[in-house]
Image (cartoon, rainbow over all chains, first blue to last red; front, side, top):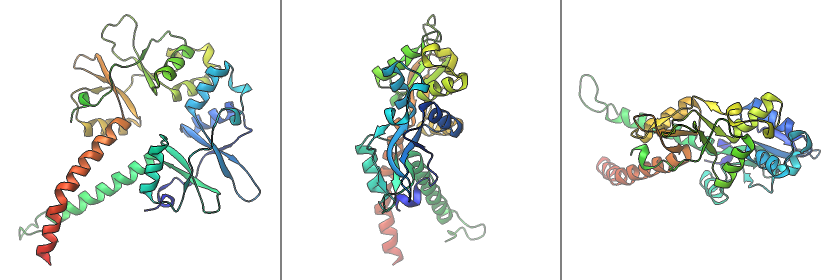
Length: 152
Length: 149
């Protein structure tokens, strides 16, 4: 299984020059705790940072200022961990754990942003796999009505 | 495994009337993602609410004001999901999932605060159980395959 198969394809993005207040409103509307910060060259967006709710709150404490005076580029985490869509899921988990982050932008082989992979995506995948395994095991051991023998 | 064995304790708490900026600073100083809100007069610290970075951001957006002008009770999530200390890990995960939250205060039978549990605490436990199951099942599966051949 590859990162590109599991990641959320429609990443919510903001531009580094956007106001933090607008980014915060977007995060609330979308019910998410982080957005990908992008630069937009002519061909495709490129991830240059991540902005989390904690980044914003910490910046407000440090600068003792409100949203209106902050830009996303001032507050975001620069040089974020970036995962290639061709990377294996196991390798991605290792990278996330090593960097102590729970999500990362996913890029194509040409470097353009294609989505975001989070621990929640990985958990959903794991739950689905276990459910399928449980169902298969149940089918294998459940006796038939007339013979008492396994169905498979 | 019971939640009491894996929850974090002691819990960093806040009070409803506390300045939000002070509570946010405490979250950062203690490096925690949430504070449990309790009444200052309540020795049992029964949870009244929970405060996360998400709550702080959402409160400011909805009220069109700044965290320096707000108190904890203005933005906290009231009536938080609480998990009993004697609950099983799987039961806790199901409850967290059904409420769509990542963390919950842990309480005893009288409702007193005894800890806090997060999904991040629970996942390694599940992973360990799956690994044990896999290690146990692998030799059985091999023997079954050999017989069928």
